Image (cartoon, rainbow, N blue to C red; front, side, top):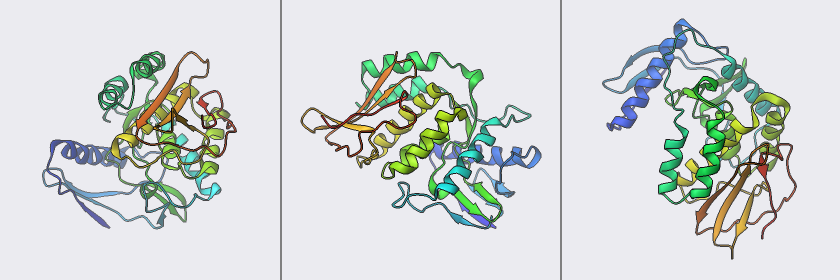
Length: 277
């Protein structure tokens, strides 16, 4: 078994601990169609969660992996996320993290998004009300993905909740900025119809801006999805909706990005690529 002790006493993490406990309690009575750890005991007041240990190894130890995932494992992970998103819990007990515009407004305050970005994002978000949200893991870091003898399993459910379809896949795409082949595989999976392209686009904007907020380290890599703006002073990413009506340019001052691969991926209508200016 594994004993998790959250030593951060701030209200934010107290809510996250409580959310993981509620999620695992629900899984016990209404199992999802994927492998998850069993809850053994929990004390939300003390921040203690005890779960059963699943056999296997994590996909990677780093938030931004230094090596690309095995394409077969990534394919299985994407299929696992599809099954999770298709699952309909028998009770509405999960956190609703779907106030996208509120979160985007916070990133605008930090200078990551501008007024044009916000207008474009509002167009996209309004197309999908809360009824279109699905259950997502919410934090599919490589260290939260186990490759087990039975397949892929997900652990650490603090951020689980209802989000637009494709949030987990978008986070995977964002975290694999140094591995264009992995990103291309995710784009192809989305383009094959696994996720609504505009939902994936909004989630990309969310996950990329979140990573930019977390750190001033590069998240884009050389995947052909970034371009240099001006005299190399701004790191940016352009996102284009499937009908071309909304374009979001995510920027982060102080960093230039060289683009080695100008080729558009299979998700070309949703992710606008460009050569370095």
